[in-house]
Length: 109
Image 1 (tube, one colour):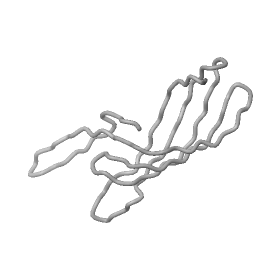
Image 2: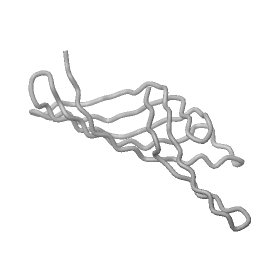
Image 3: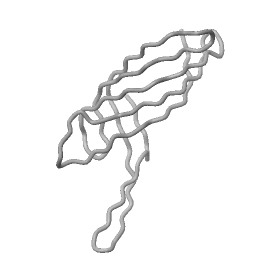
């Protein structure tokens, strides 16, 4: 589960009035991580399925990659990039595909 606050904006123009609105993203799903360790780093390919809710709710998927640097026996820092897209393409809706970048730490046990 993930929530990204204020990750997108939308500009609408109606009768000369410009409206700018912020959007957040909520995701609920599963992620498959396949990787290999080489020395103090782990490189992984990521694939996910889930429910996304930004402007409207829909089923989505993601693909991407991750590099994790082991800082010790139990602590690491991970860098991730994923491309997210809608699995329910409809011509009447224009939910955009998007790219996310992540930086975080992990504690192993």
